Length: 124
Image (cartoon, rainbow, N blue to C red; front, side, top):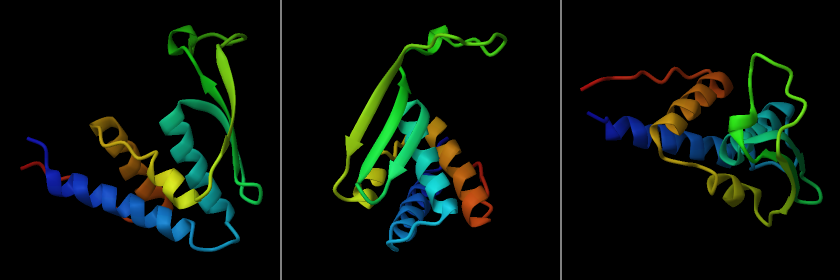
C-alpha cells in the first residue's frame, strides 16, 4: 500500500529545496549540482549546463536508451542538443518534478544528500 503522506512530504520538501536554492541571485555550487541533478533526471540528459545570468539551460539528451551498454565503451549514443530559455528558474525546476515511485525514490536520495535529512520510509 502506498503511503500518500510520505509521498506528499517528499514532494513538499523537494519543492521547498527548489525555492530555497532559487532565493538568492548568487547560486552556490551545491545548489547548482542540485539543479543539474533534477534536470538530468527529468530530461534523461547526459550533460547539463546552466547559465543563470542569460537564463539558459544547455543539455545533451539521450534519445534512445537501448543503445547504451554499461559493459562497453559507448562511442555512439543518439543525442539531441537542446538550448532552453527559462523566465523563472524556480517555476522551471518545479515543472520538472514527477510523481511516480521511481522519481520519488530519486528525490528522497537528493533530499538526504543535499539537506542531510533522513527520510524514514514507513510501510503501513
